[in-house]
Image 1 (cartoon, rainbow, N blue to C red):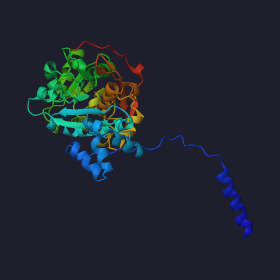
Image 2: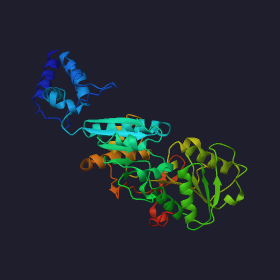
Image 3: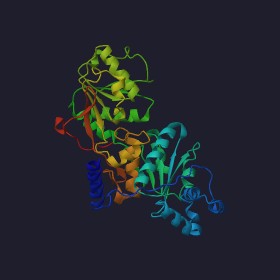
Image 4: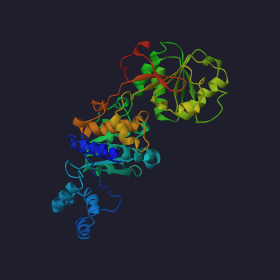
Length: 397
């Protein structure tokens, strides 16, 4: 037995004698999140301290910068004790503003993504969601002038409203591309340049005949269709008034050998693709902007439906840091361009020296690269740029 114990003791002794090194990994930080919707004033904070409710105190004061002067000593002492970076940087206040019916879901996801990103940057912050009441948009903006950033969600059909808006606070509109406006504005924009994407897509087919499927009731779909018809004269137009029906009555042999442009949402696009296959029509190429850059396309169509399907994509170099931060909320920025644009806008407007996203503002518009992808059996494959000429920025209609 002794022959076994002695070598083990020597081994343990040698292990303890190895030089100790500090880990290169940073120590973890603690964040206190206030889950209550009720504000906490000076007396409320004092009561939390008196009852020894330190966690509640730190969570509440992180949202009440006005109280810091009275409780700075306690806040900094407890913050240092728990490695909570509450007051190392200026507190950032962001508000999301939009119509509940149109944007409630995307605003919730945006709030999570912004919060995750600012936590990665070790910034104390609050992200508030506000819904526009009726036509009182300017009144809502007037009430938010003490924030650091207003993120305004507007559909393309409401773009003319921007002309009349005023704000001394930074105002960022992530849903619209500045290029579609025919007036000057001091605000910032993060929308995808769908028109540049159409230019790139149409360059794949030269000057051949074109057919366009679009939703006449959608301002964005109509905008893209008007733009494409001006670029390729004599296009066949297919106005789909609803998102789900049998298209046999409107499809025709004239689609054979043509490029088709799909200015339709993914459910309608999948319907069109499947029925083209079903009724034996063979377009030359099937083209779509960012609207249909979605992995669900592979679940909703068969491989033969996706033959010669090309999609433009502007999320060409997603930040792994941002991707990891928002993945916990089920957000995949490889495909969710709006969330990605919002995070990029927040970084470049509020933390420009620490931005992890490569997109930058030029003339107050986030600039994205464009990549053409071909739909394969199981995924998207990049198309080399030399496959077609890249036109310059054409003038807007």
